[in-house]
Image (cartoon, rainbow, N blue to C red):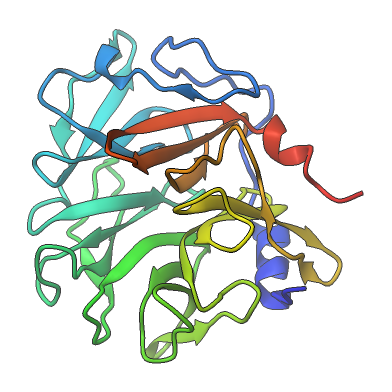
Length: 295
């Protein structure tokens, strides 16, 4: 059992997801059922881009992705005439940028960047940009900087002043661990999360559902299918329960990574990599998750 009492209160009290009746435009692509399907981004994103870390803004009017070719974050915007072509996001103006996340209030975007004090090719830091009244983004600001050779990964903020991320720091159990940071008057305090959330092996990519009912993450554990798998932990009265491997057909012998939930809560979107094959983005109905919840 993982007791995240502070986080549970914040998630339960402050985070609200979009209305269930709200419909989102996934570029007209036919959505999947409980069998994962590859998202055909080549039909909606012009040639010359390699789509990674895809996310929609909470209101469904913006689509962001990290381009694996240029190492920049791009945005497409929806208007009455459809979706715009990709344009480099204003905050993606230096270094290698990826793993963007927009807060539920649509006011802040966090991302990973190797701009100083980070350094290429992978030793990045966490940055954020705040939404201006015009709808554009302000200049990015450094959020967390700490000495590490591995960088910081996959920032996720479930509520103002709370930030989760992956890193390998001095107190890590293994190759990569989860951390929670809390923002205060003197900056950010960093807390190393306990077992069984972290293990001596490999954990990355923390993500919480919009209502805080469950968390997702990537891990390599003895009950896995090979490489890394996606795990889920459901919230209960005591905190978050023991992690559950979500199983096949989502998890395979390859690397399953970077799981997120679509703005309408209907789909899990994740990346599959390794095995001598190009990485691909897949999506699947979140029914594969809710049916795993302990009774």
